[in-house]
Length: 337
Image 1 (cartoon, one colour):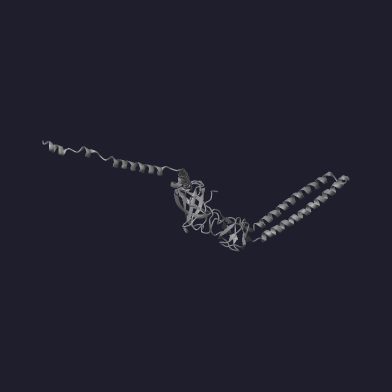
Image 2: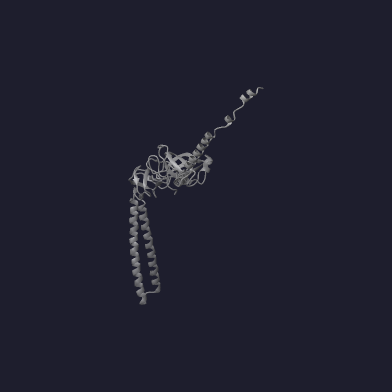
């Protein structure tokens, strides 16, 4: 091969050298950018305080959210609103209604007179008993005088000891009879007081069962055609419960004092707090259910007995998170009784 052609094909050694200046510029730029990034990323003292404060706030908020959340309702059933106590006032003896001063829906107070029975017979018996009492007081006074007189005669040796014994026993018998007369008067007054029927609680008349002039009796004659056995029925509208027939399959989800939320079907946007207050001691074999009662806290006029309501059971004993003061949407949930 021609040496001249070979020489022309060889690379010049000067061309083989690479320029190192451009490489150093790139390296310097990389180092500079890394330093700036490290400086900006390094936390300052103030940033640490802000970071710690923010962490505490986040943890506190998370704890508050966890503690206030009641969880989802474990069970929702329907029942009927009832009065916890419905008291039917009955007479203590057979008699005629002389006056009745209330009607259905009237508010009554504890001790208020609601019915008067005919008391003519009992007033006569009281007068008779008081007359006997007056006679016995006179008999005792006479027996005491006779006993004191015979004691003086015995001291003068005029009367015998037997006379003294007879008069002493006569005096003791008179005093016993006087005590019996006092009892008869008290009994007659008690019977007269029974003609006045008073309300034992403060509440509302939920039913009026008789009218003036009707015959009433404390006993049932075993049929519907006999005399009435009750006069009026009263209940406290501030003491309401929801009566539920709970299926035996759901019994494991319910316990005493369990928190509940009651929503009447007539006002589904209103919610009331409550808790499980009663559980029947035995179940209904035919239905396979157990009756429970949920006490409603702070009921208002929107809750009417015998209307249906939905009850939600929560797996806690404290109040649900959305419970609050009584409004159109919620009622405040308090602690169990």
